[in-house]
Image (cartoon, rainbow, N blue to C red; front, top):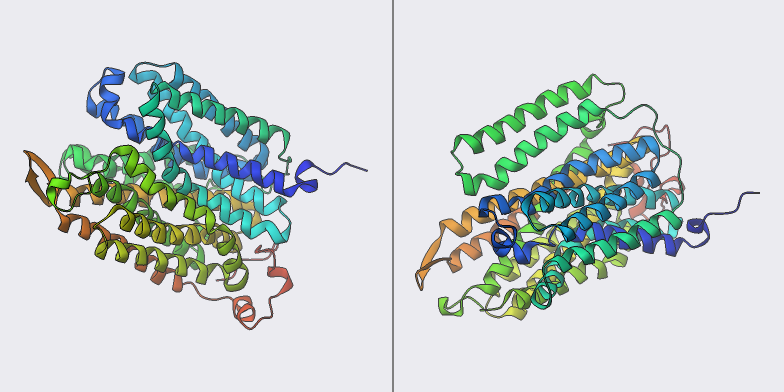
Length: 490
């Protein structure tokens, strides 16, 4: 009789490994943000070149998540998780040993590719967790996409103030070692859920289109929004993605099944994902700038980078704290209402920030409210995707939703930069965003949250959702799964 796996005997241990590893991969998003102004000097390069150290990770992560998800559907979850962990270790070591732009850029790209761990971890949690832990596991792992970015800022700022910048990447290397060992020794090997082969041409086409689009959006402020480089990147990316979509529709084993993606529940969840990513990132960009704005402006709070990071840290912890709440909401209300509620809570945080911005604790409060909404929403999105997608496409579907959130965060960076650099005043010879600019950013964040809630409520309730509200949950829906071979209903 085969011996049960460690995950089957100790599901909490498996969940701890998946959660720690997902958080470690997510930390790479904000690892170098505290040293971004010093990167040109540290690496001996121009500021425009140094900016790619941040951008490369975001681009690589955006492309890697749907590809990793599809590969996991075809080859099983564990090999992809282990490969992602090893790539994080290699990338971190390259950065830790590097002193110039080229090796650090290569290492940061590999760190971004390792973020493909997160959507695969979500789909694995659905497979191996017992029913009573399943929604809690999905909620916690989904939240790491936001938690990692929030906690990375104060951790990195503290390390940089007390040690050489290479220590950031030695820390990342240590995390990657633990992540690799835990994945190899604790997580079970699960069978593939789909047959066929990886659509390599589809992966390359999607990568080309997504990278061009994200580069155009993220660099538009530096290059000029009407410059040939910006317009060429954005329009070229859109054309490539349209051609890619036509190509994918003709494939028997596509990277992304666009017919499934076009189903109303999946499509609207992905649109909400873009708006949710926008809402999450807006506060991460705007609040630190307001905290660090000079007190001489009359509204700036004069905090250091480390102090600003510490004021933001509770927001990241709030996402984790809401994991059990998100899980109960999914159990009782379903993904549709949970996602809409989360986005309304996120918008409420921006409303608080719009009116309460006179002290650091007020902005911390607003960030905590918004982050609670992000935690709820990020838990609901993968649950909605997996409820309405065949089991054979679960990994790819969750990965695509993660890409949609990345598109939202990139758009937020561009839009916030436009606002904060367009509405400025001169203070001590420097151009500083005005109070009205910050308030406009908060208003845009609130609009994004309410827009996502409205889009989510456009998802039709299934008959089982109505039964749940009456207290008669159908047994087949207890796990939040669509039965194999049963078409998803919209």
